Length: 402
Image 1 (cartoon, rainbow, N blue to C red):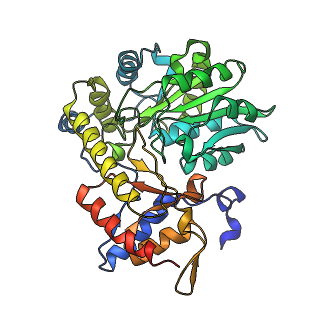
Image 2: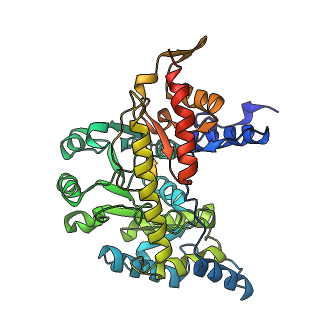
Image 3: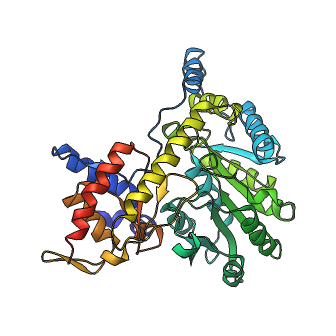
């Protein structure tokens, strides 16, 4: 038996570039090389103690049985309270569905809304899985390019020009992975005015990096009353609470969509882990304004961002900007493309990232995976010392390209 038994769906699916680069890094590490990983998309902090304790207590109290498909009622109620407390948004339990991570939340939505021929607008750079999840649901991703000179943000005019007769949804992400860009209230207001003209358009607002903002505050597209019923918020506990391995995400949106996602998830995975939900309950109940561990993590990311930008700006030809959230920088490295490394030509950012991994033993992720081949993604979810060492290794390797 060989690959002929596999479906067209899986054969046409792209490998996750972030996981692929992580695997290549591990291979080199296993051979004894000192690899600095700037490719991983998770905080390098541990889950706060009180949250871990809630998980431990769930085990000790035998809270280890099947869970309701959309999540425990008390967790959904706590999420509704969080949305009221942090975002000034009103949702009830029946509008909230808890899933095995925000990634599943997004996949659920696409599986519930898309038919063949339906289009989803996705501004680029985008998170690597967005287009692939659209394709898995038989939809067509329509990529909207943005520019580094505008901090990789789409304008209201660009959005409106892109909406067509087959547009079913728009996938929006702020703070952004891979750019760290954060839309201001005024920028969101202009986008909301466009969305309001298309009441049948669903807006999927991925807000997983909500708490990792360095100045100002996060604003949700759902906070604009004219379009609230068109918006489904996707969020979770992975990034803001350093809980990536607990695998808890959720949606809050129109009740018809929540019911559809509940129905789909009931046939696909059923409810998320009882232990993880208990930990997530402790996380979302805590006021982020009073959570010192979250504040300390964000403060550390802010300092690392500044150091990374300073060091990158010292490399000739690299073009940067100042991201206001998440923990990524997405610099333009086109100055170093179509150059020679010995007999080898560095044609694109994938070649460049593989060259940096091979020669500098530093792992980054190529921009092709995010819809922008001129850039690479650098995660600064690692120590200041490793950031400084990584850039000191990268600098001479780039300088040697002819």
